[in-house]
Amino acid sequence: MGTGYNVKYFGPARPELDAAIDVRLQTLNAQLSTYRDDSEISRFNKAPANEWFAVSASTAEIVISAQAISRLSAGAFDITVGPLVNLWGFGAADYRDSPPPAAAIEALLSTLGYANVEVQTAPPMLSKKRPETAIDLSAIAKGYAVDEVGKLLDAAGLDAWLVEVGGELRTRGSKPGGNWQVAIEKPAPAERRVQRIVALRDAAIATSGDYRNFFEFDGVRYSHSINPRTGWPVKAGIGSVSVIANSAMLADAWATALLVMGETEALRIAEEQQLAVSLVLYNSDGSVTERLSAAFQQLLNE
Image (tube, rainbow, N blue to C red; front, side, top):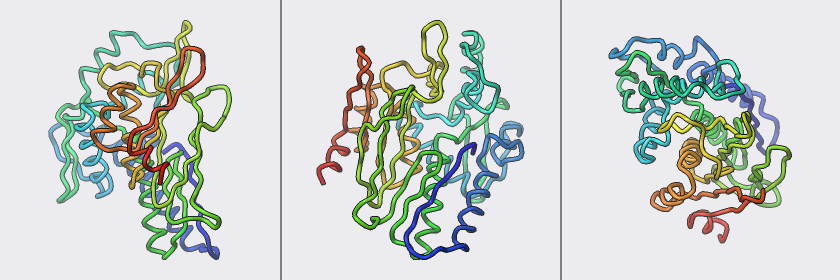
C-alpha cells in the first residue's frame, strides 16, 4: 500500500504471530494496493464494464463500507476519485508541480462517481457501469488492515496491543502504566509539533490532513486531498481531521470525508453521526484553532 506498519504488544516474543501478521498484510497488499499492477483492484480497474469481477471477501467488505460512507457523506468520500488523484500527481502516477488543465479536470470528473460501482458478497464480486471507472481504496484500506491485524492479536490471546499502518492506529487494553498515549500532530508543514495527546483504550484513531503531501504554485498550496465533488484539492481551512472510533477502517474513511467537506459541513455531519472528531483549523495569523465534536469532548471527559 506504499507505506509501513508497526505492531506493539506485551509479553514474550511470538515469532509465529509476527509471521502471521506479515502474511496477512502481504495478502491485503496483493488485493488492495494501487502500487501493484497485479493487485486485485488494479486488475478490476482494467476489467470491462457491466461484467462481474471476482474479488476476495476482504475487498468486497471494504467496498460495502466505503459505499455506505459515500452515501452518508453525500459523495465527499468516493473510492472512484483515484484517477483525479493521479491527474493531480498525488497517486501512483508521476508527481507534478502545477495544476492540471481545468478542461482535463472537468473531463475526468464527468466519468467518476461511487454509484458507478456495484458490489455483492455471495460470491464476492465487483462490477462497474463505465469502462473508465477505477477504484482506489487508499483512504480506507490502511484502516481495514489495522483492524485485521487486531483480529490476529486478539485471537492470540493478547489483551494489550497497538497497531499502526500508515498512521492509522488501533489499541486494545492498556500498556503498563496506563492507557496508550497517542499524539495528534499540529498541521505545520515545516515542523513536527504535537497539537493534542489523547489516551486510547480499545479504540482506533485516524487523521487526515493537507500539510504533508502538497505542492505550491503561484503562491497557492494544492494538497493531495482531492474533493471528488469538484475535482480540485480541498480548500484551505481545515488543517487536519482526527476521528476516534471502534473501527480503524471507519475512522480512516470518515477522516478523509470530513476533511473534504470543510468546517461547517464536517461539524454538522460529525454531530449527526455522533462521531468523535477533532478539527484543527488554520487562522489567518498562522496559528490554529481546534474544534471538537460533542462525542470527542465526552471522550476527553471520561
